[in-house]
Amino acid sequence: MFESLTGRLEGIFKKLTGRGGLSDASVEETLRELRVALLEADVSLAVVKEFTEALGGRLVGQAQKAGLTPAQQVVTEVYQEMVHILGDHRANIALSSKPPTVIFMMGLQGSGKTTTSAKIALHFKNQGRRVLLVASDLARLAAIDQLRILGEQIGVPVIGPEPGVTRPQEMYPAVRKRIAEGMYEIVIVDTAGRLTIDNALMDELKTLKSLYSPKESLLVVDAMQGQEAVSVAASFDQAVGVDGVVFTKLDGDTRGGAILSIRSVLKKPIKFVGSGEKLDRLEPFIPERMASRIIGMGDIETLAEKARNLVSQEQAEKMVRKMGNNQMTLNDFLEQIQGMKKLGGIEDLMGMIPGGASLKSKVDMQLVEKEMKRTEAIIFSMTNEERDHPDLIDGNRRKRIARGSGTTVQQVNQLLKQFDQARRMMRTALKSKGNRSLRSMFPF
Image (cartoon, rainbow, N blue to C red; front, side, top):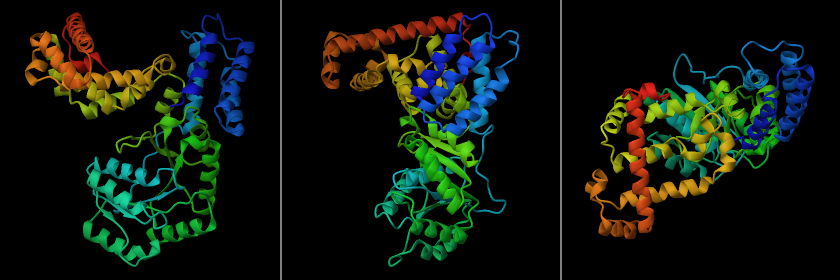
């Protein structure tokens, strides 16, 4: 995510390291480099100009702030201005005072609109709200079936067209009746898209919007489209009206131009960002956290939230006690690996750790993921007794485990050695910290 832009920004900040002061000449040089970096990241020219002019106003002629190096001062000001460009504050979905809250989903074909509808449904279901999905995309044959399958996966009901219905507006009476019967709090309407914007699509959307009177009209855009995504958003807003934007495929966007441009150009907030196909890969958009990721400072708060959702404080402290008493097992080791995968995988985790983004180019991510899968296979090939008591694994057992996991005895030996080292390291770390709870050791 934004690796190209983040790498350029980190290089710019690094050049300021070791300088004795922040002169006007060094500020001008930094602004020129930032301008080039943002333009190469496909940020719109108007936004680049606004960004660098505002940043220059913060830095040129300003005395160096006490306690900050030149690099730290520039990073601080770049971060603050980037937060402003991205929207200053988190923009939540506006909920109706009288349920249901209708959310109207729009977007071109291929933007991920149907999957995003299901992701948002899961987001609200996890908050304990009653959600209904409306499959009104009659233009794409597989869209209705796709939404129904996704609805089954997340346990959210889906209403689609009755036999003989050919226009999505004909569904409205049945949807209204279903809403009244089910007392739903959130109704998400998935609409049709096209490969390109056309008048027929806009007319259909305007008709549906007048029927459903949505509280929120969300536009789903593909982050990998760059400035084309901004143009698409402007066209939808002019023709139908947009209340907020959802960016998809952020994991494939190495530049970040669209997400940095759209708030300034469209004057509408970003509500969610999605990365990956899995239905839990959707995050509320928080400008402060996104700016921190972009400049290479990571996103510890989001990482902590994800960790809290996976592991309760009681579970975490139980694990710490086991580590402190040297009782950590290979089952615990396996749970930690699977927990990392649930957090989004090693690549996403590195992007959330300060300085981790710059390490991505130096680490073979595919090799790391491959080794994690191999570790899982080896542990799965062990008996429960062997996982609880690795000391029992003698030469014959190692051969059997290697055969069962499709690995070599040397690889099994390597895993057991790594596990023993990790167990001893954690025990030593806990003793040095007085066996404090995991909550006080880590940011979650």
